[in-house]
Amino acid sequence: RTSVFNLHEYIMQKNDDVHWIGSTQIYMNELRKEFNVSSTSPIRTATVLISGIGYYELYVNGQSVDPSRKLDPGWTTYEKRTLMVSYDLTPMIKGGMNAVGVKLGNGWYSQEQYVPPSASEPNYGPPRLMFALSIVFVSSETMSVVSDQTWKGRQGSIVHDSVYNGEIVDSRNDRVDWAKVGFNDSFSLWVTPEIMQSPINVAANGQLSLQDMPPIRAGVDALQFEIDNPLNLENSYLSKE
Image: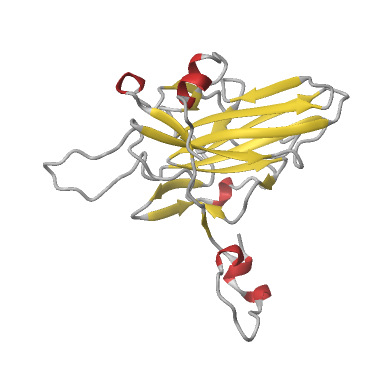
């Protein structure tokens, strides 16, 4: 559903701890953070609001939160309206140490395009992330995990990505456990992200809104037709993330 109040003002101006994070120095397309759920009370709910622009993929404790979901958030005129997506992470968050990881892509936000030489290229700047996880315990205690400079980021195996021109991947930079607790990478440079400018022009009544359209899906979950002979999914590209 679309927010009926200024969600950007509520999150950003009434909570000084939440920031858009990224980098102007490197192509920071992988960010991670570990955090400790120290309460002895069971978790009642764990809900996250996330916006990673141009595109993002969210991982918790090494697992993709929604593997078939692609190309989030939706494409908008970002300074007028940027979309956030909400997930219920209650089954994925546990007592003790947890880890979250986010992959970012250029998408339509930081995009090279084929435009006439006389036209300006609609490039808003480097990718960036806003993340706000709220955990409520049975005891009514609460805790939050937000995007700030306690995260670490790096350029991952995707060294370039473009809506028009595809991806350039250096598989030597793949790190299988990068979104798991206890990850230690002595071969990559993980650095503190910068506080980035919000994409939203609040002075011109720009809005941060909850994304209300159905997600784009790929793979088996995207199939919406019946077949007489089941596919051999073991050898099909549809079985792969």
